[in-house]
Length: 118
Image (tube, rainbow, N blue to C red; front, side):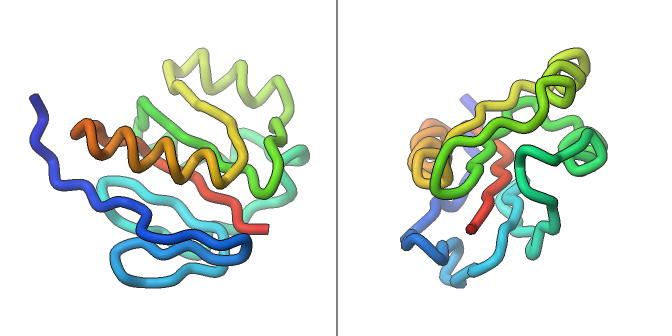
């Protein structure tokens, strides 16, 4: 068992999220227990493969993509290209992504989270 000590998302409102004791009001990434903020991106439905360069460059295998208040999918061509690179991406609303992130980290897994805050 991988005994990493991942932090969890501590609190969440509709406009901000608390992680490792700090509040974030802009979209961000969590990777290897570190926040990368802000994460600049266009609206989800206009994203390109370039907007996922971080997860591609870091060869992230398990990616949770919280797309804001509602579940919105990036273009299908982007999803297909990520799958071809063996990057598993789960697309859900941000509230669900936060819950799933906490469940996975409690299981000593190390997901990467892309979190959109509307």
